[in-house]
Length: 182
Length: 372
Image (cartoon, rainbow over all chains, first blue to last red):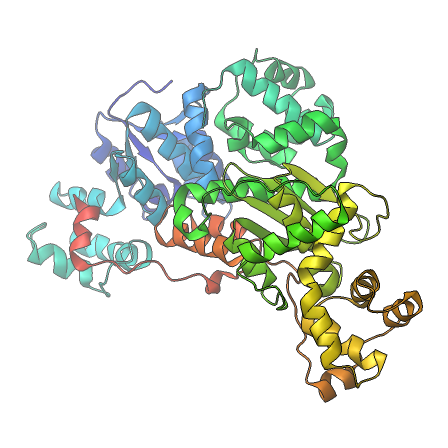
């Protein structure tokens, strides 16, 4: 089903960030030839959230993003294994599909949530997050620090639970030479 | 999870559907598939996507993982003996759920559950005197002397590998059930009953655990008059909670009081209901049948509670989970092995979101994990 061994598999949260900020073009640039894949469980979550965030329809319609509907047993077993650790009802099914694609296809995952990231690391899956993609976009001159810093600060404090306050991202990134101060 | 092929997966879907009491058509309707598609899934001809399987599991009230894991052996033998009638029993369904939750959590936090190494099963009691002997052995395993009341029954039972859960299942169902796991065991007590009866039910389940009964569901503990093992385990339960030497000593200690007052004090001290106390005093020959009838009719009043300074126990009230299980869920959550939502679900609504610990504080240098 999944053809490109280098595709990036997105969870719902990171796609919401890119779509919400109007950066789908940036995402396309960052993905380049790699392509973007979402499991159908992420597609379902996006469909359910369109009502609250209409811009998500653009994600669902984007040619760039391919929906994976794997039905092989190793994928189903991996999905069920993550489902038991993460999901309650429909909640968190998206990340179960993301992890299962990482586990069975070896693809790189884009996950921001704490526990699925910990599981990915525990199992040696390739995993990145929204923030490193934003850093890449800054280095590639697709975005600027002022454009991303509000979202970056939110992610750092709210989802990654790192001890940085507002303005922390800009300060840290400049100090570490990760990005040039603008 | 074990190796499963499409045919086995289909067969497990069929089995779960039948246990849920649904036809293929009813399941198809619930998951928005054709009946023929469900039929093909069950025969292993049609593949499913993960979401389809997730929807089927949700419609059948089971977890997806149950289709890929080997069921608990005790459950398999029970269901093959009972056929599909077990689906009628609320307690059976919940007991299976609790058993699989405990096994799931064991994978992440076995140390917190603290299951001791399996002890050798004790012989099934063949007589009432055997039942008393079994109770004496049980008291030793629970770390009790021959006389003392069993005040912390739940924790003591959990410490020897039987995890007691309680849920209010209403009136028209069993008092309790127990299932042996690959390691340890779980009991489910119907908390609709009053505390004395709940404790008696747990003591009875402890008997099943000690003699290694794989799977039991007990209706109306103490009502059985026949000479079968259930009535001997009722005797075991009374003997455990009301040890002869302890009861005789207490009876003598309160000898100057009225029968009613002695009954109130003994029921409180040993935390049993009046019917159980009356029966025990009768079988020990401490009272005659008229005396037992009198005690059975005694009610502990509010005035008794105040004047005698009685402690009102609430073991196994409402929905209650054994401490080792709660600790294991919290450990799995703290170690980021399970999600917050899943932790709350495993705690059966006994925790609110704010009751869970905050996520682990990370160090500044861990930012590198998020940018490289």
